Length: 336
Image 1 (cartoon, rainbow, N blue to C red):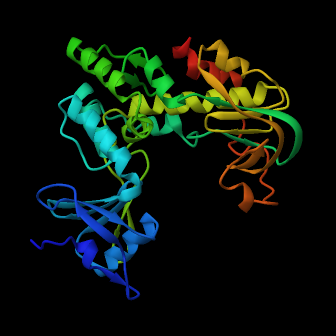
Image 2: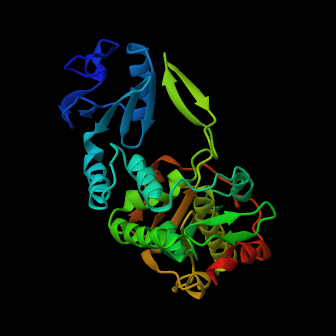
């Protein structure tokens, strides 16, 4: 095996794809890198220069799979979060991966076992991954409220970490073993300070509900993976957050924006439905506002990254479709 990884030798348009390579392990299976390309562009270009195998892109970097051999490339900008996730794994005696998502998968497997795949959970979530509500315009005085660590709060509110979604929409709360309860408590206690790992626990539990993709010879190839054994856990959390945000947007006075776990309203108090459920929330900003589209708004001095690039986009009100309180109450009954 060469002393240098494939990515360090790859060329694209006469320029190096990545630089600053440093080994992260003793056997050359993990490397640190720097690149001016975004990870998707980098994966596509690498798959042209190194056409054998599959190039997978993630928020943390790239993985190059060739049969049973996998080489991981961690972006320098993401290394601190990857090392935090690895430290959590090592502290619990779990073999760590070279990505936050990989660490999350290992931790779920350690705490709860393989779980029970439930492909029909796709219908439970449907298109309701994130609630969007947008009224484009300018506003004199509003308040931007945010659910604190929304997915993490909801994950901790589960009656058990082994819910089973039945085909009729009901939830069966499976009782974990004493060892699973103990490990789950250790997991919750260890992950709290690592935001990306917290969110990854929910994200990886939903694996298989949507097709994944890798790059090979410059082409993006989509594959339908096996639905994971903890999909019901993730589906409950994501759908609950959707309904909570939709409820706040549709009932708060003068609400003009909602996205995933935040709401802009004309009331100087947190959304009543959030406090009624005993959820923690905080004020992110207040003042005059301009809403330009999903992810593009300003409240007082607070501006989103897309605010300056979405002028006049004219996105319609109620981006995610109709919301119904009776449906929300049924979905959120386990929070009461």
